[in-house]
Amino acid sequence: AAEEAAARAAAEAAERAKAERAAAEERARAERAASGACPAPTATFSDTWGASRSGGRAHQGTDMMADSGDPVYAVADGVVRTASSSNGGISLYLDGDDGDEYFYAHNSENLVRSGERVQAGDLIARVGATGNASASAPHLHFELHPGGGAPVNPYAFLRRIC
Image (cartoon, rainbow, N blue to C red; front, side, top):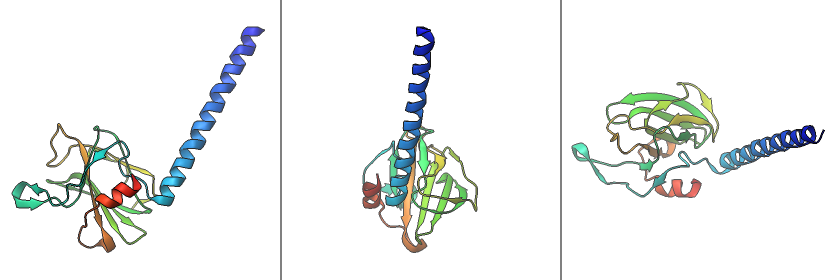
């Protein structure tokens, strides 16, 4: 009888812990949605805007260094367009309901399809090293295009939401 009671208590404690984790995750998601979700919360990053790149190009985003396969999230509500190129590799654009466009490059995989509607905080891709990214340095290349126009330095935006 004592063993059964202990087993029941352990099972109930595990269920409570599971419910508490789920509630905490939902609160975190709601907070991210309210303030913009960090696209790669496991990443480290610095301001590399304008740094020289191959072919005489200037860097037009922020590289968020993380482990390959780490989660990548939508920073805003909107609609996704997937893409692929020799430079960006597996990529996607998020056309935000806020009027801004967000570009995510070097993904190992996209988890959403073109035309799919997402909310801030939704899992949309995984960090990778596709395109011209070094296999030894997986990262998310993140760009911010206000009003869908030319890119601007996203570093301050990322510091605010990450």
